[in-house]
Amino acid sequence: ATPTSIMVGTGRAAQMGVLFRRGDALQSLGDIQTVAFDKTGTLTQGRPELTDLTVTEGFTQRDVLRLVASVEATSEHPVADAIVRHAQHDGLTLAAVENFRSITGYGVSAVVEGQQILVGADRLMLREGIALDGVRDAGTLLGQAGKTPLYAAIDGQLAAVIAVSDPVKAGSAQAIAALHGLGLKVAMITGDNQATAEAIGSQLGIDVIVAEVLPEGKVTAMQQLQAGGRKVAFVGDGINDAPALAHADVGVAIGTGTDVAIEAADVVLMSGDLGGVVNAFHVSRRTMRNIR
Ligand code: ADP
Ligand code: MG
Picture (cartoon, rainbow, N blue to C red):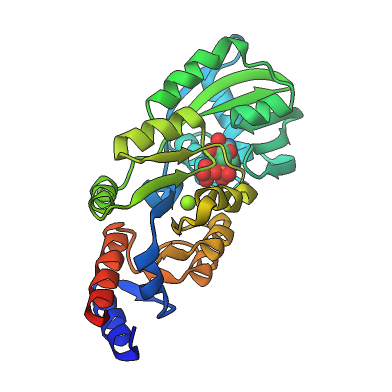
């Protein structure tokens, strides 16, 4: 590519709200075969709502929500925010917490009013030896509905099954269809539950789903997509997406995401609209055609 055609291309992209931080990314996009997306905040709105809270025998909904929200008030995860907002909406007064611990990719724990509280994914309960026997089906059903099932335990006993729902962005399905139209394969990499990821993936027409990935596993998941020399673009917004953005053949960050993600990316979308990813490919193809 000539410097001039690259300049024209990046200028045209900028007018569409697609910023190329590296000019050669315009060229690299031409070799991409797979576009892998982070789920939360990238394909979805990233602002989940609490939709379900079912307590087990001996616990009351109000008390479990109050204890769980007290713990989550210290966490910065979007799921935590959904739980705290719901408790506030219900007019609950949160209690002080001690020994707060965040286990990345699993959930959180703390002591509230002398009780040991755990909130998180099924793998947190597994790790802490909390039996989920009676609620496995409930969790699967919530996942199949595209919701994220979470579990709460109090003093070693399962107290509730909770679900949060994070709707997909308005333009996600259309963007994926357009990428398919360009002959690209589309993947999703997420820390979320397998059933939830599959439900959202099929809603959006995603070809490859990699779920229940720990934050440090996102790079490995992407490297697997790159196996055999396939060229992969990764699109993400979060702090934990930065390593995958850096390892991708082309890293695309959502401009509304975290600074760490933007710093690691080759291309930045000014808005959260995934149509920007499609536009980036269009401009790349146009630029490369002009110079060949
Ligand atoms: P993602 O952002 O893709 O959901 P994470 O690695 O941040 O991936 O989290 C993986 C899973 O761990 C979440 O889907 C959720 O089930 C659980 N989790 C993480 N943080 C919390 C939290 N603060 N409270 C409850 N569950 C959590
Ligand atoms: Mg995200």
